[in-house]
Image (cartoon, rainbow over all chains, first blue to last red; front, side, top):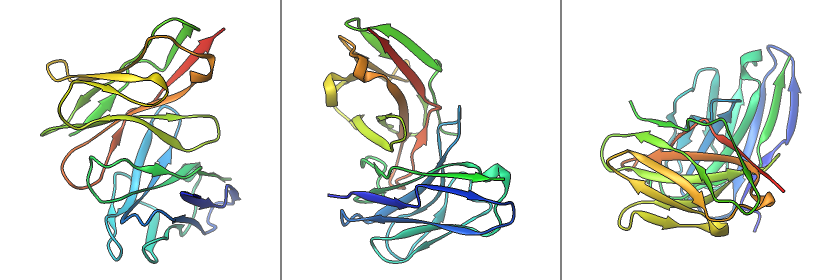
Length: 114
Length: 113
C-alpha cells in the first residue's frame, strides 16, 4: 500500500516562479488536505477538499490555489512563489470529512523559495 | 477561537524512565483529540485518539493518553521510554464534521541511553 504519495520531495524556486505540488492517495478516501509545517508553528491547514468536486479554505490560504482533480488526486499550486512560502508541505487524506477521523499523511515536499 | 497548546518545545528523558508530553486544548463543543508522531524527514503517523468514552486511551508503541475535561488536557504518556521514541510529537484537536484539525506547535522528545 502506497498510502499518500507526494511529488516532488524537494524543490527550489526563485521568487515569482510558479509550481504545482502533486498528491495522490490510493485508500479510496473522500477527504484530502494540504498543510504547511513551519518551525515552532505546528501544522497549519492551507486548503481542504471534503469530497470530490469541493474545496474550501483553511487557516492560511493566501498565495495558494488547489484542484481536486478526481477522488485520488489533490494538487496545490503556487502561482507566484514568495520567500514566505518556504516550508514543508504535507498532504493528508481521511475517509470522510469528519473531525473524528484519522488523517493519513504523505512524506512531505520540502520547498525553498529564494 | 479553537487552539491547541504544547507548552514544552522539548522533553528530555532517560531510557527506561516514564515520559509525559503535555497538551492542552480550547475547543467549542465536544473535542476530538489526537496524538501524531513525526520521525525525521517523514510524514506524521497516527498514535492514538480520544473521541468519547474511557478517559484513558491506549495507542501504538505502548503510548497512552489521558483526557481530562476539567483541566482541558490530553497528555501523552509512556511508562518506560525507548531511545527509538525520540521524535517530534504533535497534539491535534477537531470538532464537528468539518474534518479540520488544529495542531499544537509540536514537542521534540529526546530519549537518552
